[in-house]
Length: 53
Image (cartoon, rainbow, N blue to C red; front, side, top):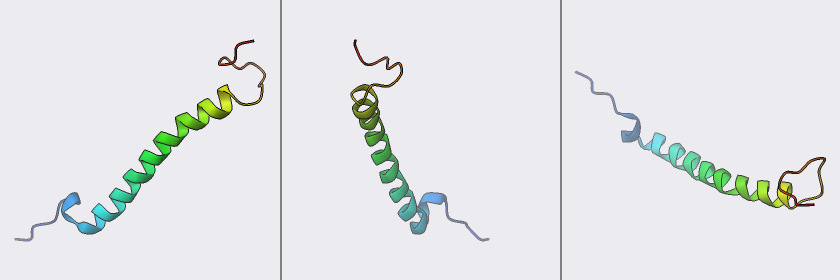
């Protein structure tokens, strides 16, 4: 009887899954920074709820 490997038993899956998780973590860290830096503190937009007038 043939036993198939599970997803995490295959080292090729671990390799791309690790890279994908690192990229996801970087995106999750950079997105809020960009939102606060350039939306709330950036140039005046039409109606910016973050900016006090």
